[in-house]
Image (cartoon, rainbow, N blue to C red; front, top):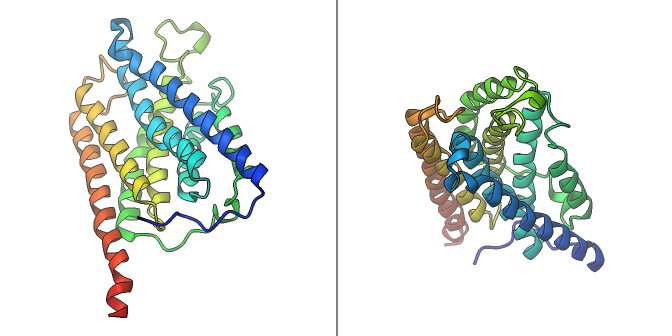
Length: 267
């Protein structure tokens, strides 16, 4: 089995227990909330117009925030899991400032929880200690960041066109524009962060790739931007899906090479 992604915890038992509880409870609650909010579009015809706005965030937040937090409750020394959750939340915060709805969109809740978790984290000293990146994976993330930033800016700024209090469509009052902008930014930031490989991070490489593939698939299924606002359509959906697959493939191949190198050297 792969080793854990950090060294042994140095915090006391009480602090580690508190860390596990906060991570597990918030991770589980956010997963349930994401499912109730995001999957509703599949069963409620009146919500179909919000399909891309809600399903995109559902996949990203569930796989790259909720799952890492639940994993931290089980394995509290997994520093990559905490980095990944922070990455997605950072994307949401950046987008909320673009859309000038950081407070009204309640985008501060996630960062507050993550600040608490960082204070309690037994491996907090490792959080910003990055090693050398996987150049191919980091390059993919940087290339993806270019259209992601353009897309995020365009969508987040739409929040300024209508007063959410006067919105009857639900797009502005639900902060859908800045929300979808945030998950796209969070995805590429997460991909960049995970490219700084550590032992035991294979799960997170896969989840970043799967999240990208599911976001791309959602764009393909809901390709009509007139019916499903913010969808980036079939071709960009295919590109996003393929990029997620390549990200996983590169991670698998280079990860295997890295794992085999010590043995080859000693031989």
